[in-house]
Length: 286
Image 1 (cartoon, one colour):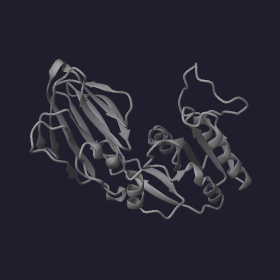
Image 2 (cartoon, one colour):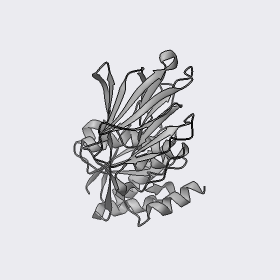
Image 3 (cartoon, one colour):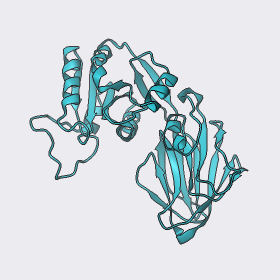
Image 4 (tube, one colour):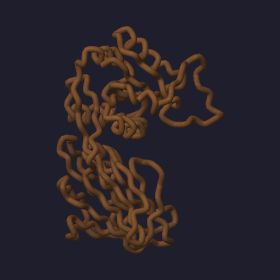
């Protein structure tokens, strides 16, 4: 590996101490490391002085990997940019839980192994998500974690029904539903009572949010299934779709959300010989 792009979260790495330490480690190992911002920072927020910042899209064209510093939200935000350029991503956790991060801030010495290509690649499935309104696709996105349909602050309940390859599999009234990848199974889906699924399983996990009856449970669908979530009655016409915690799209009664396994895989760099279940136990016991 000759060149990496590094994207710090300025709100977590306020003085860029982590990313600058990583730059020193990589440079000493013979790897060029450019620092770029992955999102705009509030104008009132003071960035560290004297740190050269480069254009992310320009630098990704010639990069071998993307390293991001922050929590899982930072990794989710930057992973799609890495996937578009066909390069792997490595997360350094300076957030809270950080299920997706490979390294903690105290383990950055391992970054020197990138210089000799001493690492493995862990491929993660994605979901291709489309929102249909009056039979027309009005929004589409790719999810690494999940696509979430929730009621708004005013709505009492929503009434989703889940269809797999045209066969009705679930219907209920409740606060919403989560469609998650195995990567996202330890995020909102788990908090809503969904199962923990190892990333290599490549399943689509459908978990009701606060269902108002006892019948609905999480449903695990095979990756080749075509999932359609039809939206029934929505009080006050106030429900929303959010992909990987991004911009919320308004959903109306009669709309459908189509979900299937994405063609795009997210590549995560592994520098440690740590199992998924070791990570789950250590993170959840914090």
